[in-house]
Length: 130
Figure 1: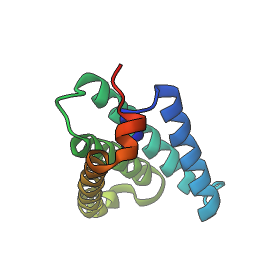
Figure 2 (figure 1 turned 120 degrees about the vertical axis):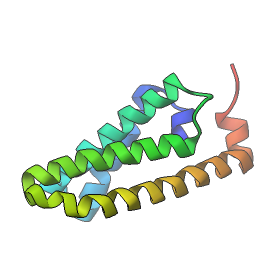
Figure 3 (figure 1 turned 30 degrees about the horizontal axis):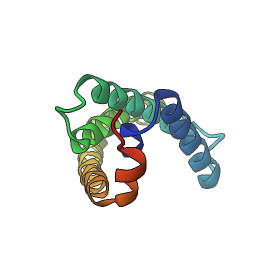
């Protein structure tokens, strides 16, 4: 979320892709169908958050952007899980899955906003105005 406000599109995309691949490598899911969940959810989240940031930069907080990203990621992952694993049973796990995603996103968004507001490093290195 902090990088969203400070890096260029291609650099953000690189960060997201490296994060997904490294995470999958360390968790042992790089060559499993679980990687499909990560790459699909991560890229959906990335594109929605970047779009929201560009369109409504001053009108949406990092909390809102975080919630949008989590929702996009969760919906895509639920769709894939419905097709590959759970079928119609996906409707039983969807509500708690989405709720946990939104709660986590709010916490992350608030944390990112607090960090940006309080960090001298961010103020000096990342938030320079042109």
